[in-house]
Image (cartoon, rainbow, N blue to C red):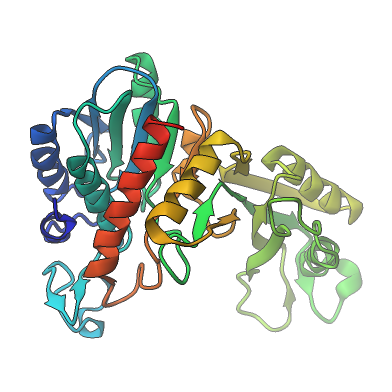
Length: 376
């Protein structure tokens, strides 16, 4: 099976998160003839529903799941595109359109890989496809995984088809991701006249000292599989239009991308300690979109590396960089790794993927399935 027509059909579905846009229907139509039982799963409150798809063939072990998303980011200004973002036009060996790389191409390649293999492979195959990866990720993968656990579908292994390759197909496998913590700090002071600072308590000065305390030294120097954690001040605001008034409050927002030397709880404690050290009167609000995680190299990762070497002829690098992905939810249920296309154009205008690379990715995925379902 050639993955190209399926990818074009998927691109032509305007599935800007969280809209389904017809993409899951296209995918169901491709999977049912391959022997999959498809279940459409809808989660979320009225008016905010997200459609997801779970499909499975077979019931034996090992159960290998492929996870991905059909939702895409908005195309942005149409003037920046040289083609219709949802037209799936072929141009100079490229298939153009939003989602070509991230990650409708990976889905099409995986389905085509299954079609190229014998139907009587040992074990079982499933697909977890969400429409909520590019959005808040509240009513997608995390809810589908809960449903899978309740219905006896928890996988033994999972491959996420995010575009992980950097320069050439297969050069990078992600075996973990950093965590992400957002923090909003409000420091209270005493408002006053700028000419009489002794009668006021300037919260700006206190908050600046807090931020200096937090940024003066690195959080760490990295760990075996992770680069150093980073803390970035993303906003600083006092809402003060006057030039001669000391404000009563000052606010800052932070984002911390952290490795396995930290947790959201330990970093929150660090923030409290820095604020107390400056004797600040403050409020602190934090939210963690995902803890750091690592799939320790072992038989699963070794099989993925063999498949890449066999199909792509490269020795993949094991990596944990980048932002977050839905793998952060899957790791709570089974070993997970991410392997996919070269991601150079994801989220950009004129997003595209080379047709030959798409077909090569399908061959790579076929090798992955063989390695994981028929080890040795």
